[in-house]
Image (tube, rainbow, N blue to C red):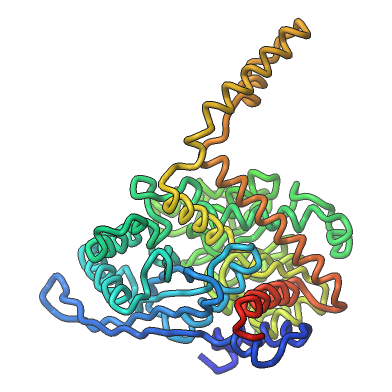
Length: 470
């Protein structure tokens, strides 16, 4: 990778542009930008056949202005220290933007999970967790990991169990990791949280009449055409909720290629086809595109890169036709490509805001674990009884009956999923308007620079209030 495409270089360019528009001391800005701690771990793995692999792994803690620090763990053969540190810094800014009281962190293990058996993956995960525990990089009040690319609820459960074996008496040990199965203290709505957050963010951006008029679109999601790069957890759920919201998904891509149908694609059916054939290509009624990254050049209203970083660069940015680029992945648009898009009027909804749904709901899971009670458990039935009594009183006084479906809807008391989704929606709406307001205060900047300004100001305020920079 060239130095210009190093992930940390891209993130720091965006930081510096925003920092220049703030009034904070240079030393404070340097402190905010730097990664506070990085732990590089090397350990042996005995494979099922008796051979030994050497595994490289990292955990980076970017900012300790708030504790615990928070960030996912990814398993990928492309993991390296620069990527982990860059992703950790993005987590700091992301948490600040959505008012989640965490510092940023990130972890990575340099493996392709397809190369290892389930038993080998468990050994890798448990050894990684042990190494983190040894150096205090894993604790409910210090550093709380979550799933990321290549990991999921199973890995988080192995980490939790490993942590418990070293801290069996800790009351809050279940909060040492988020993204767990429901049966292990996970929260309903976490799996789909990032994709749902992408939907809420895009929906909010599209609701603003003057912004849509500026790029030649009608307000609202209804009828807008969508192209989605990547059908993993984030891409799939983004597609699902955008479709349900009235948009039309016309193109999708995966590692084996891309497909397009201008009348719209049923993403669930596409995934069923892929499960049967091991490819999204040759899906009935769709046209195969030449290669996977052709998705970036599809003519559409909204392009959603939901794969990996550095997908839109100076080499292909001129071929991007979308009016809105919604960054569901981390860092899919390089800093110079971003400048080109903004200059020609394309709206770029930045990753440090748009994919914050995952960490927001991870925060809810962490709170649930610390309180040791499921959201909605204490008041769901009480609210239903109160609402039912209110309906009955209205019917008695008017002599008219509500429709059964209407009654059921009104009486329903919020359960955990309702509360989690409501909290996520509130978070994404408020954060978008704060970013947009900041953008409108500075001529000629895009939403990304505005988002960084919001994040820098919040982190700087925290440091100054703590007395670190009097």
